[in-house]
Amino acid sequence: MAGHFIEWGGLSAKAIAPGAQLRVAWGEKIMLSYVELAPGGKVPLHSHPHEQGGICIEGAMEFTIGDETRIIKRGESWMIPGGVTHAVRALEQGAVALDIFSPPREDYK
Image (cartoon, rainbow, N blue to C red; front, side, top):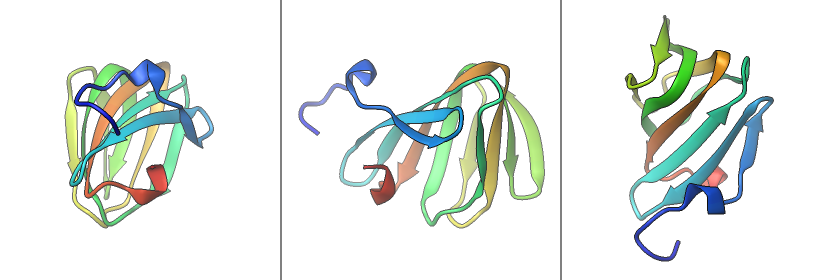
């Protein structure tokens, strides 16, 4: 990635599940993922070795981490240790989130 500033609209979107797409930028040790979820869009239950934290920028989503499920709204955040299963489903207005991964996910580059 060239430069120090990110223009999300200029990056290619990658579909990761029906109704879910992301754009990514990364450095040596972290990755930022700008995630857009259509109304009802889902990222199915999964896990990965990367630590993941994030913040809901717009809308609302039902988020399951391990055995806990919550409604996450604009301004609310999460932290997921590596290896913990999690899933998300956008509510009726859809959602936009920023996820941070460490280390960067090779499968998202």
